View (cartoon, rainbow, N blue to C red):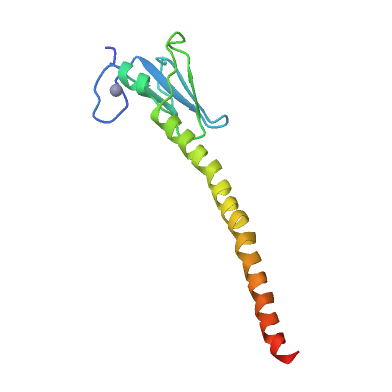
Length: 125
Ligand SMILES: [Zn+2]
């Protein structure tokens, strides 16, 4: 009587080939060989789900089962990268606006005021 280990993902009944362990202290998800017994923070995954595995933001995935497999950037990684680029670009856009437009609009106003004062003075003198 050997219980068949199956993928822990909902609606996936494929046999598990790897075990995912969350190491909360290190924010690391370790994907390794199928564990011999189930543990609270372990999730059995089938081949497909272990390959598709993506870690939550700020977490690192360590794959022990298949070191030869190339680690391609996942969608989450690309999205995080895109967000980081956007965050970095935002302050520059805001800074250029006031810096470029401020002095240019202030100087003509100064000149106009001076000219207006001169015009008021000229009738007096
Ligand atoms: Zn699965």
